[in-house]
Image (tube, rainbow, N blue to C red; front, side, top):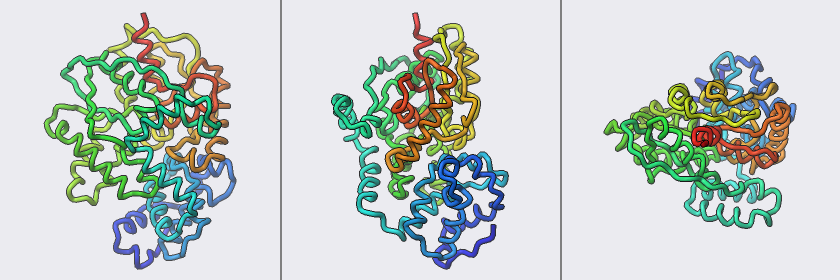
Length: 409
């Protein structure tokens, strides 16, 4: 796809990157078949191909409108289209560029702007944890829309303190420690059982995705730099072998630090090294299986697994979780239909686009329920919370079930 950049974009890094991405696009439309919003809405402009044309028009100098902004807002950034694309179009990078430019040119309505500000400032804030505790304490009194965002408080157990020769950094995250603290503790216990010690750098916080994807890209990059600073002493000394991520949304972002900070002279090299060392927790399963198999006592019944988009499309990691959990004796199954489609969580998407998000959630749960499971597992806190809001079955991170299986008497 040829494009003639407007003068304001010709000599910018963003413009050059966007032009290179657009050049790969052949307008084939394969992406529309796997785009969740196109499947629901049936509008070409609510699919990747249509959004690419909207971004192309803006880059060529056409003035964007509120309608342009809405079509880009409705994108889940699930990156399913990237998995489908035969030309390797990096749509996720292009839509980030397009959204930032459009937001500069199109003022948002006051309520929309206020909600986005609250999310980007509130979720990574130290105030989020006490606010979540209050919400959990009065959960039964909350309206349904807010109650869906506040998970029931569950015990998290103890974090192991044994020392091991093998050490890995672990990102605690911004919302996960408050919403589901057992995920981090279960991760530490499972890795401890396999002889791996997890280290949390207290100065590291949000991975930067919340701000970045709400078009505060400067703020997102600032958080990325802060995390790199927090991790770098351990990385530079060689005392850790990897950064392990148990939230696939954080994982896909940290894996792209090298790309997102490539033009930062002070951090480009460090960011590339951080990306190189980043591993999703599921990537450790091949070595965890032999270490844990003798002590694993999986529960009976079918476990339905929802692979998050950030894992199967963003990080291109498919099939590992269910395969290796089956090797440990779990009866893990993936939905027969539309296992590739987004559940509708997508970070803050379920707050900003609730109608689409809940339609996708119910569609996903319908496919998972056909497996007649005793529980649902996933690999990202957003997916887990979103699916739980529509299901009476327990929805948990797969590492929590593995932790219980190796701890069973």
